[in-house]
Every structure is written in structure tokens, then in C-alpha cells.
Length: 266
Ligand code: NAD
Image (cartoon, rainbow, N blue to C red; front, side, top):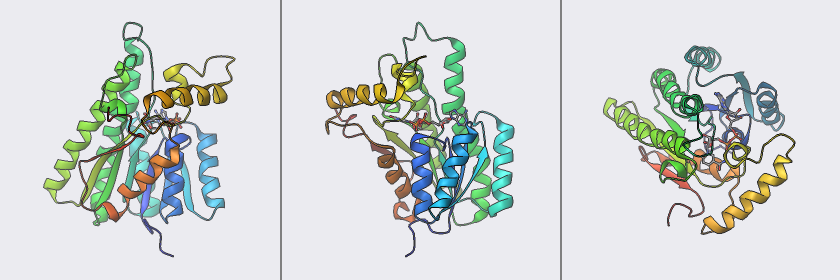
């Protein structure tokens, strides 16, 4: 059976955990050759090995998305190994919660560096290879419901995700004007259970039992805040990313795919 992204080459950042890992798994299961990158090498390499063990095609590279030199190296490696790039999932991100009064300038800048500069660098360095491939391509930038609406105690995170939203639309217009057939869209997850919440709601403190605490906190939060009444799973986001990566969405660019159980509707 032919997969939905058969033969395409995909690069997924922040793929060692959570949503990025689920995206890499889903794309590989549908026939893509997936390059996973992350800061955390052990988990990243294990994620790639797991995909290979299940019959998929995957490899892992170390990458800090805030480092332009590392982007140059990663894209050179993709070019050397695969000769093309069809799908870029700019997923790596961090979430720092707390009052704007308590947030240090260093932390604000760090969050902008990963969440915004990382996406900018990804587009800047991946687009030339996508264009050379000649078949167009799909760039998927991970924003958030926090890029659509404000949230108390999340001002810095919202600023970063709002920037991703309009950066995406602007690059989509630039690509369309160039006629390069590269589509550029943003994805806006709601409450999805992953470790990112430990630094947003404080479930990851020293001596904490992060996993169960996080699960219980997110269950409680989602039951109140989300019209559907429950939290999402990374696979819910990966399904949307797969659709944007495939030619099924060939007429979609500059769009916001909101996957949030209705959270942002009210
Ligand atoms: P996660 O913490 O499970 O995964 C994030 C991954 O990014 C980690 O593997 C981490 O090592 C990596 N990373 C962090 N900084 C990096 C850097 N400088 N360079 C390379 N990799 C780096 O969190 P997640 O929930 O899977 O987050 C994935 C994306 O989804 C993020 O952009 C996040 O903002 C977004 N998002 C998540 C939710 C949610 O509810 N989980 C909601 C909306 C948006």
C-alpha cells in the first residue's frame, strides 16, 4: 500500500519528545524518510531507532535550533544523504510560565530564540533545498492556541507563538509569489499532554513526580477549559501535521490548523 507521504524527505525539529516525536512517527509510518533533530541526543536517537525497528526510515541528528551554524550543518547533511527536502516541521519549542513581572529578560529572550528565531532559521536554511527539489514542499510551523489568544501568566510564550503565526503567513505569501509550490502553514495545538507543561504550570520541580502530577493537572484544566472536555494526545497533532505535509492539502497555504478540542472557540 502506498503511504500518504511516500518517498518524501521530512525534517522534524524537537523530535525527541512529545508532539515532534509523534509527528516523526506518523510521517515515517506513511512512507516518509524522516530526519529527527533535537538537543537531547539519547532520547532523539532512541526515537529514530524505534521508528526503524517498526520498519520505517529514520535517522537522528543533534541540533540546537537557535544556532545558525547547526542549521547549515543539518541541511547540508540532509542534502548529502537524501539530495532533497520535501517537509519541514519546525516543532522545537519551550514554554516558560509566570508573571511578566517575574520573567527575566534572559528567559524572555531564550524563549523567543527557540520559538521564533528557531523557526526563522529553519525556513531560511531549508527553503533553498526545498526549492531545488523542484516538487514544491510543505513547511509546518508549530504555533499554539497561545498564538491566537492571550493567556495570563504566559505573556512571553504568547508573544513567541503569535510571532510564529504571522511569520508563517508572510512566508506563505512570499513562496506563493515566487511560484515555488512550497506551502507554509501553522498548527495551533491546545492542551496536549507532553513534558512542556512542567515549565508552564510547574509540575517538573525538584523532587516532583512530574508524570502523574502533570497528567492530573492537565485533566483538571482540560475538563474546565476545553469544550470537548478532555486533553489531547501528541498523535492528535501528528495527524494534522501529516495532512499538511501530504498533497491532500495541496490548496492550503498561509492557514492556521487549530487542533484544540474547541478551546479557542469561546
Ligand atoms: P516537549 O517538551 O515534549 O518537546 C519539545 C522538544 O523540543 C524537546 O524534545 C526539546 O528537547 C526540544 N527542544 C527544546 N529546545 C530546543 C532547541 N533549542 N533546539 C532543538 N530542540 C529543542 O513539548 P511539546 O509539547 O511536544 O512541544 C512541541 C511544540 O508544540 C512546541 O513548539 C510547543 O510550543 C508546541 N505546543 C505544545 C502544546 C502542548 O500542549 N503540549 C500546545 C501548543 C503548542
